[in-house]
Image (cartoon, rainbow over all chains, first blue to last red; front, side):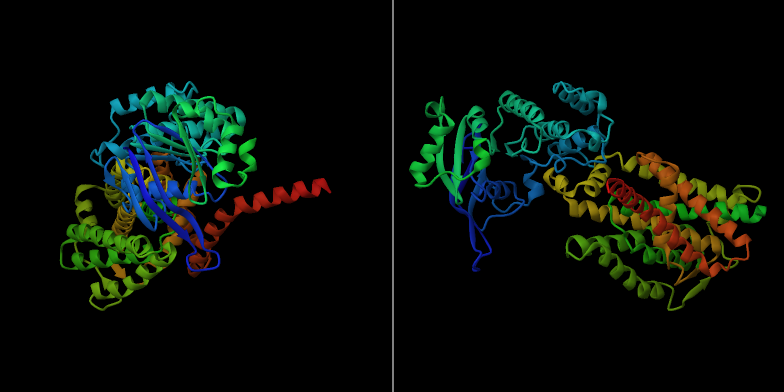
Length: 264
Length: 296
């Protein structure tokens, strides 16, 4: 098992009238190489779960294990060397005043454990150039351009390379195409699919689009009120339509799935 | 302008460009205005003066660098590990340093160093003519410049630049941003203290109040420099700081040739910084206002 969440809880505004259980006894197992797509309405706990796994906001109790190591309360910067995360905002994953090449070098550094006073070697520069040209976006010619000058789609594509330059144990995609125009969103999504399947990276992806949640990945999970409502994979998932999965949700939760965006 | 005041302006421009190197790291690279500088500059001068007084000017420079680094570490620890606002952290260290500086100077507000051997005395024996101070300063600046230029290309230096640019991304790239800030503030204040140490030896005295307004003076140099060289990488950024510092000193020297009272120089420095920082915003607002009028 690559990722193992056991009875994870997270409560916001505890003991006040605004108390909100963002994660409610959440348990989840993800095997090596699985590509899980996650859907759920606002406040279902998707991002809170990602925060707990990546360490940017810790959970109250329960345990999170990654590849056999307990990471529940490990500091964010330490687990970042094996958990890659990409956010919706393309500005968030890159340093705008550093060049494309420098951003990638920083991402590469995280797992190499090299002497911090060393300079990037020829070999590393070549590797970065190769990865960029594999994108077919012509970015290998803009390696010395400040990344803030690239478009949102281009920045998100670079962020994707940054997160997977050294294969992470787990890749978390937090609606990483939602802020892009439809064309860029499609190309970044296809790029994601290619990189994840070529490198067999264990991946979890939050999306508001049920169609793409079913089109990509190998397993789909619907969350509601901080726990898992529907969890389908394998043959059961093949050929499943948006209507089918919404019916499953209604059958389990006895209510209608309440995310207008998801149906678009 | 006489030859003496011309050479004097170059000397001051060079020695204060080190100060501006230091604040360039905090102000431009880390995006924090570090007010420790007013204190660490004097700390460097005080340490340097005490050692020069007892006949060890070189050791004075080295000790000043270490002392400055310690001051920077304190400010950085206050803002990272103790969660105090960045500006306030600098103010707290600066205020505390006033007492420390007095203690270093043995309780005296001023240490005169007339007729004491300092590093410029050595330089005078090496280089002929009136420009021996400039030669000595150029060597030191070249060394600091080369070190910084190298440092900001290493993995650690790259992490410092990225931390100032996008801290959240750095933590997500397994960079310990607290540690990075501590390193950066240490380097920044070490260079500032070196600047103070050199000023004390050059002017042959250290005064506990000589640090007042140093932050603003260095910002003015950085801003003037960035107006001369735009959109730059680290190397050009450092070059622009030296140019800015020289231009600033020439402006001051020119003002001093008139009957203008020197007591207004600090006010002018402040105005330079205010104008330089506000002009882009005011321009922006005026353009928007123009668009709005055009619509009605």
